[in-house]
Amino acid sequence: MARNIGPSCRLCRREGAKLFLKGLRCSMDKCAFNRRSYPSGQHGKARTKLSDYGLQLREKQKVKRIYGVLERQFRRYFHEAVRTREGKTGETFLQFLERRLDNVILRAGFAVSLAQGRQFVRYGHVRVNGKKVDIPSFLAGVNDVITLQGKEKLMQQVKENLEITKDRIVPSWLKVDSTNIKAEVVRLPIREDVPFAVQEQLIVELYSK
Image 1 (cartoon, helix red, strand yellow):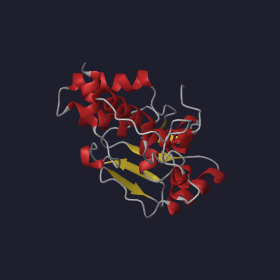
Image 2: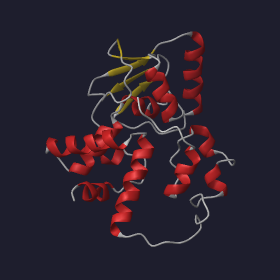
Image 3: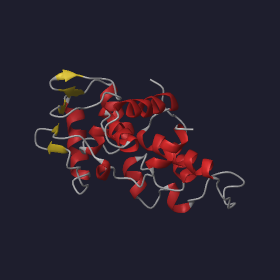
Image 4: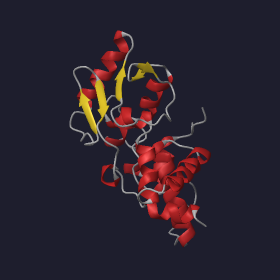
């Protein structure tokens, strides 16, 4: 499975926004973005006016990094959204990203970061409708029930994560049972469920050229 293994904080600084790639650390004072919100490097502080293409590219890169998806798979989601022909392409595209299993684990509060949610999936701790699924890009559907299984140490970690994230707003398309560590997809996510400031139309314009 291909993934980004470079410094996470550098990505936030490059996009000029917190992407919450490190979970709790991003909410603390020691977050690198709090100290230096400009891009790293010699010319990081230089102010440059982006072209229309530059704005589209930066928006695409930001969304890719938020969901931890590389270019090939990201583009495939877009083309799948185009073929769907139901609703707006940009909104359908974001729906696919939100439905990724690693993201569902994060949204439910079982993990404190996308990286941890992906690790739970890859290590075989996640069950969808009772069957083990170890593919982070698996798309959860309506009425799917997601549970976690593992040794006592893992389940204790998940319970601690639920306690840490208890003040986080759970999206209305998920029904979470914290006691039994279970989440059910009650409907497909819509545009208003995306918790980040995203201009998906810029991405549509970029890929439509």
